[in-house]
Length: 580
Image (cartoon, rainbow, N blue to C red; front, side, top):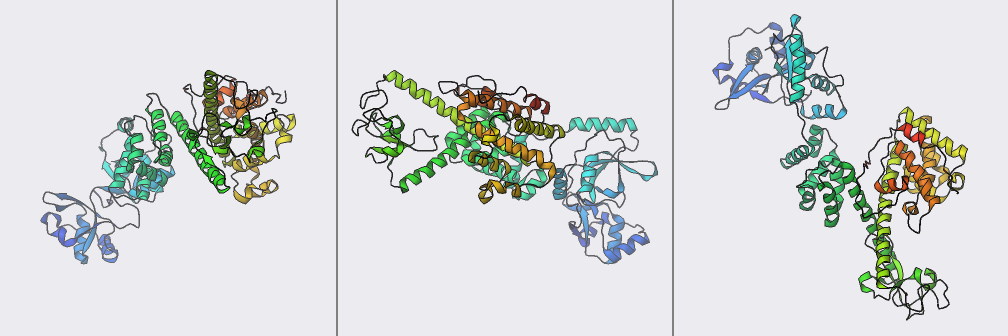
């Protein structure tokens, strides 16, 4: 073996090699030999010390034995050096290697994460090297590691000698064989190894570089694995949790019901990432609504209003919106504000606003519509049916809100992407042209309304004061003219989104075709661009009734990329008259 060998564990200059004292090495007689040291090598070591480490292994009794580097050790002794660098396994200089001219892999996938992993921890798997005529050292197996290591600034790679008699056919067969033998870690195995590394003392940054993932991914794994409640949600399922899903789970460490619902979605034998993502989005929406409800309650209590729990109310209690005066006139919330029977309650746990109720309509001179004072005129069965219907509507509204949040995030990702495929850009331009020239969907009427402005600000990523003044929006967005189609599309999309309100999913007595039909066409356009519809959105697109209590399987990937441009373009035809 030549003096091209060096250290495997710390391979990026200017990192220091581990060292052994000369005394420790020379104490073992087998390490000192009567060899002639070339004059140039002797002069270099006397001037600069030993730069290329010795290849040293530990034998029985922990005795250090030199495998390669006898000339360097002899020169170090002559130069009076106290210590020399060493490597525990053979490596070879990167600049001494030549890549295989016909490597089987067309795409080596030398991505940033791979390079960063090599830079952080070096190359762990040896490359196979064959000595060819003329002294060429060719990499027969490990060309990805060779190029990645070179990009990472590694000076050496661990290596093994290939049989010098291996013919060219054998080289290609080796490429096939080694590719078959490699089996990457499963997602479960990866997260388990990451957590074990953290338990063993590895820092987050080191784990992230070695695994080729983001630091926040490592933090998510450690948080879930370290929490009894969170780990209980993922433990015992065959599902391969993604890093983003593990990070989202961290929000629910104090919410066993949410964790149970998410785990149920993952425990399904045919569960996929789409369904688990959707279950998480539903629970996130519930949580967001609870937070809004808490804020609303604080406002009410600060204003001196009475807040009660639904269980505290009697059967006589009635929501204010149902009340009438004795002469059958409607009582407004403002008109009821001074009633001594007014209280505020949260009707459902997922509501985000408290509603005003009258504790005893008959006592305070109110009546429900179309009935004598204090009587509803409805049987118990009718009341139960109404209650079930209201519960279904509330659940549907919750899922609609969850889908809306997810859909708008997907739109925001398109608007903010630096580069879009040309065919997708063409579809965006076509949609903008159709909207402007065709004058459909009340675009001119709705473009500058406040709800549209709020949606547009979110799509553009504008917050705080920047999101308040519509006239200054152009000052806060990218000036690159190549982004113009995306920004124009954002303005049109904001109108579409502003108009796609909750009534769109209803097919009961509250069906609103003037909302449902434009929403259906809008969803078809988005689906054509690569957005995958949730079950409630698909029901609108297909004009089918939606039952929120019926389990549905559907591909609903939040990370779907805009790629079906032809389908999106087709969705523009024919036009739908939203004013009908």
